[in-house]
Length: 169
Image 1 (tube, one colour):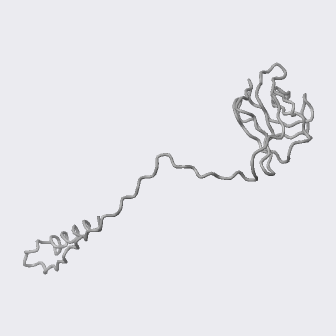
Image 2: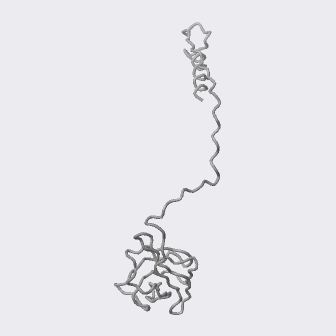
Image 3: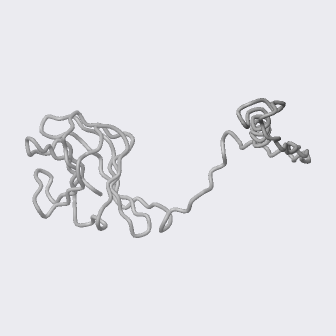
């Protein structure tokens, strides 16, 4: 590409300087520089194309192997349909509540709680935040191990009632 640009500039300088043609008597002589020649480069060894499916590098789980500490079977409450598995999982010093792939509930707009009572929540219970989905696997990080709580409650914010409950064992 650079050679092409230089050749074009040399040709323009030879044909356009001084406002006339190179043979015009009023134009000063134009010094022309020979165009650089490209030197052939030795053939490089072809680099193999990257694999379409690269082999993933295994990353160690921080803190070790995940361990299921407690489980609960979720069921509906107050006329609502809910089902699935909830588990508290420990990996090193980190604990999470996981709602499993089999999790389903018929209504959204809920908070996920670890609670001391099956029927209500209060300020001593742990609100893990807004339920992310009405189906499937989702995890919520716990600030501790959660051992002081007996229940997983899916709490309906608008009506302030549990609509899904599971007893942790």
